[in-house]
Amino acid sequence: MSDPTDPLAAALFAEVFMADQLARNVVSRALPKGMEISHFSVLNHLAHIAEERTPAQLAATFHVTRGAMTNTLSKLVWAGHVHIRPDWDDARRKFVAISPAGRQARDAALTSFMPVIADIVRDIGAEKVRAALPVLRELRLRLEES
Image (tube, rainbow, N blue to C red):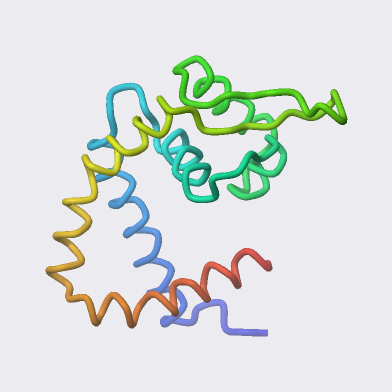
């Protein structure tokens, strides 16, 4: 068993938690009125994969409950940012796809906060950021396993 007071582990997680909080604040302030980080995250994911997903698949991807995902999707449907259709083979399932309005909202959100993120990366230095990415990715993967 590892040392519960390991200063390296404590420092790593303190930095990750603080960076997460600060990044969320930067993104939240820059998002279009009415859009939350959870909304942007779903739109961004759907735009990247360019495929439909079930609400259950989205909930698993974001490590949230189905109820939380249903709540987020309801707000996105209301805003016209996603379309939800029944599965033609199994009426109990639904499929979610990003709408053209959702893609525009996602693009507008990216346009609003990416300059801030790009400035931070430029200030830190691209090489340092490239060096940090494998460590952060492995940390994420290990946390997903636990």
